Image 1 (cartoon, one colour):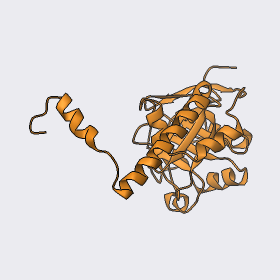
Image 2: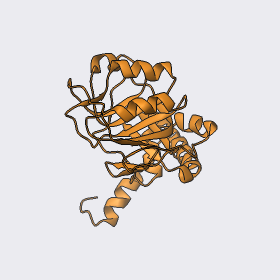
Image 3: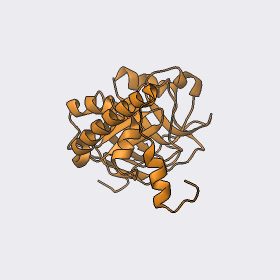
Image 4: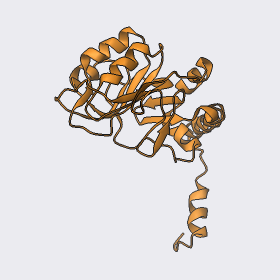
Length: 224
C-alpha cells in the first residue's frame, strides 16, 4: 500500500468496561492525573449540545479540506468508536456537515474529533452526538484524497494512536494512551473522589485553607 493512501486494520481498543468508567469522570480530572501534559489544545471545542464523548480512537489522517477518507472511516468504524481526524488544522473547508453527522448517528458511532472545520453548525449544535472541531466555515470539502486510516496522528501537542481512549466534555477532549488507560482511570477516580469531598467541605465552610499562607511564606512573600 502506498504511504499516504492506505487503510489499515485497528489491532486493539480500550475495553468497554473501562470506557464506561471514564465516561463518569471530568476531562479536567483526567488531565490533572496525566500531569497536565496531554491536552488537545484550546482550539478543539465541542460543537454539539453537550453529551459526553467516550470511546476508542479510530484515526484518520487526511489532506486539509478533503474528507474522502473520513467517509470511508464512517463506513467501517465500529459502533461506539470515536473518529479522530487530523485535517491539518486548516479551517478553509469543512470536513463534515449535517449529512455526515446523520450517517454517524445511524451507524451508532461514539463521536468525532476534527483538527479542522465543520459546517451546518446550527444543526450540529442541536444534536447530542459529540462533535469536537477547531472551527466553522460554510465552504464544503473535496473528495479526492489522499489520506490514511488507523495510523498514528498528532496535533496540538497530542499523539493519538488507534484504540487509545478518547474522552470529551465541555472543557475539551483528551486522549489517554492505550497502555496507560487503566492506570490513568484509577488515578482519576481517586482525584475525582477527593475533589468531591473538597467541594462538600467548601459548602459546609469547614475546608482548611492554611496551605495558602504556608505556601506564600515558603515562597518568601511578605505580609502573610
